[in-house]
Image (cartoon, rainbow, N blue to C red; front, side, top):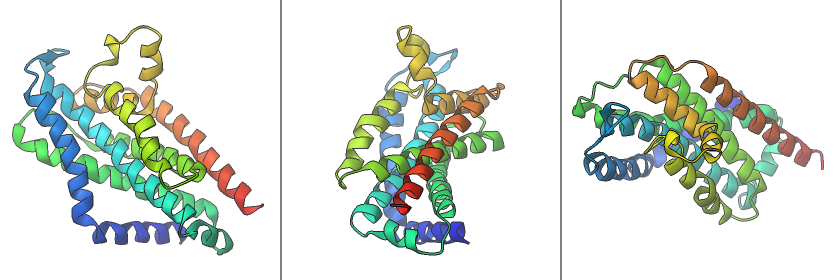
Length: 243
């Protein structure tokens, strides 16, 4: 019941700010598609660069949509509205509250990704997005929702949320297999970047889009990230409750 309540809150927020959320999900990815996709007339891995770019933008939208949906909202609720304190003293199981936040954030990220898929459909690139693609994007959204939860729990002020975006989300957006392959990076740095969650998501979604088998290693890596950050979230909130 607690999960449904949190998801209903997310749905109400989504309906209230529908146009703002949709425009925010469209503007930056569209700029990247126009500037990089139309401006760089070359090929990557034997495909037109635009075909390489679109799956990366779709994966990036999943990351940014899910992270922003949770980070700013939870920071405000915890620091100013004190809503988190009210949840702790309510009969709602805390694990249901956390799971609802994670699923709700991931669904917001999925919405952002689907917008990009719809906007690029008229281009007729021949790229494939199937059920496995959506599963990977949903899992990626859950990972970044848990990361956003952890960061919002540790934030000292509302101004910390934009800082986290600048320190974490923006570098990942440009480095993690979105605009260019990690294979072009120096050894050592390449291995670190390639195991980051967005790199794994972009690589798998791109493989599916090309009609190739993405394998399951990336899914396992994303599940490991999800387990780690979910555990940290649970530890934080239950420790705070027992103070």
